[in-house]
Length: 450
Ligand SMILES: Cc1cc2nc3c(=O)[nH]c(=O)nc-3n(C[C@H](O)[C@H](O)[C@H](O)COP(=O)(O)OP(=O)(O)OC[C@H]3O[C@@H](n4cnc5c(N)ncnc54)[C@H](O)[C@@H]3O)c2cc1C
Image 1 (tube, rainbow, N blue to C red):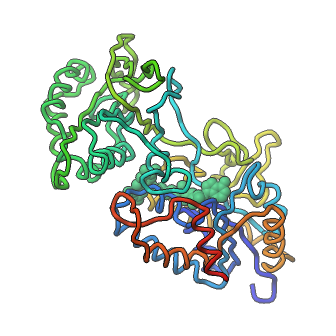
Image 2 (image 1 turned 90 degrees about the vertical axis):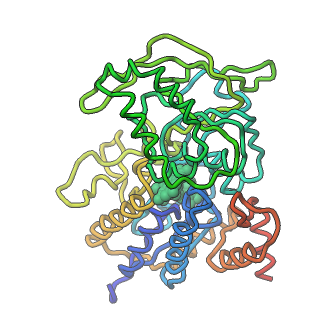
Image 3 (image 1 turned 180 degrees about the horizontal axis):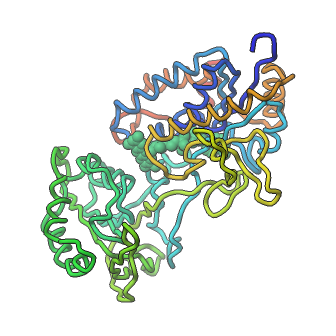
């Protein structure tokens, strides 16, 4: 690429997928500009993964700092892309970069649309997770959970929420409510270690007795399944509260029950049975309803992408090119696609949870970012550019200045990191200090510049 102008690639979103894509593209010698909504990089690695997972978080942070120290990587934190944001998708595309990668995660909220879901005491898992991870806008908001909490879902996010409720909020009870049965639970057995010393084994045994005939109807033996479920309660973290954790299986929330102050007092649940569906099972409502008393409800049922950004969107996901290629990885899967015109959105790519919402752990997002970089590399091999990075960066700075945006560069991030380490004030749930308000961070960075 030496005699030619080097391609500039803009990566929007600095979570695990975006950082992986940026890293691969920077290694390949391209100029990379990273725009990120949050001041800090990391996405859910900073604001989603449970704070106590210090090894995982520390390892990722180290890699990200190394990448951001490279001369061909330019970081702009506190810059959101979307309609009514710092830059629209079209403005971004007009900056003259050769390609744009959207790795903005799945920021929309999936709901199951039940009556009463706007009552006080109803929360979405991502908001709760953002709260205990101190994401600005969430960290300083009260989350009043009451004493008895129902968490809808049976995946790892349900376990993380239970972890926080049991070990830090020390509520009286946490009940995971699952549409299907114990066999269909989705959490990783390792994750359950964080909460298994609080399991209400008697309560769980009673629950199995309640549903055993419905399990037997699809060939599942309650005793064996119970043994399998409780057999995973090994290497449990030490008990620090009297919270009782349990499950309610074969139950679909139909209505949130509220008191005269529109505050949650319970859930109306519908009994389900299981029916075979290919290799899997499906939950089928039995039209039998009962009340389950609780003070708050957390929906941990997955995420969808943010449809307001301005990328082609349909049914919870951004649209990708349906015309498969024979390449591996398949270029089409990463290309944004306009269904109305039947064309790819030229030079616009998707990676990570922006491409497949709630799909997998950090390793999966990282691999997706790497694959996307490979696809972008193939695309750029057929192109030349007349726009050096200086021109693209000057245009970007001018546009952000005109918008009165306050981008944060890598030096600002370093000042922030040093200030957080030196701080001894209020802490998150594992004792680390994080600024939870953007303005505080921006003032601190500004003072450091003077
Ligand atoms: C509660 C929870 C717990 C988890 N725990 C684990 C775990 O223990 N171990 C594990 O390996 N994985 C875990 N995961 C999964 C892991 O977090 C994801 O796989 C990974 O973060 C997805 O990466 P991503 O880059 O696609 O999206 P994200 O991590 O969501 O990153 C998106 C980035 O885009 C930015 N952004 C968003 N919108 C815009 C916009 N409009 N303009 C500009 N920037 C924008 C955000 O600021 C963010 O930095 C967990 C996930 C959740 C939800």
